[in-house]
Length: 200
Image (cartoon, helix red, strand yellow):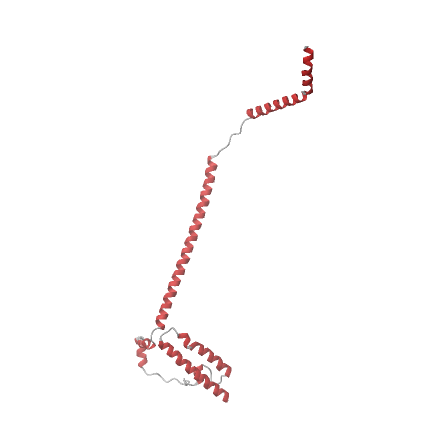
């Protein structure tokens, strides 16, 4: 009876012997691996306070340099802005002076001449030889007597551009009247020049 019961157990063990051997080997390998891990010396983490301080110091120096560069940029921008504002202020001051001068009556300006000029005005002038006639067309247009028609046209265009009333539109009425009179004089001189040159 004992032999009959033992036989199926032995047969089962014989059939699964490889499985039991594999499980036993796996268990022993796991135990050996766990023992190796437990018994192996653990490397200690090396922490250097000096290295950390050096790193923080480098970061602080870089941050300081960036802040210093930015402050320098801000100072440069401020200096440029101040120079621009100063130049703008001086320009506006000059424009105000010119506008004030342009709005002044020319007769008042003549009466406000310095005393040295007023004294010399009363003295008799010496005779200057060969003064051209100021009413002659060539004198008004600023060309020679022997000028060609093209030279006369060119001189007329230049002079009329300089003395046109539209250029003194924002100035005092005295300047406007002066420009109109000069334009009429130039037109008359130009007509006279064309007539005299065409007749030659």
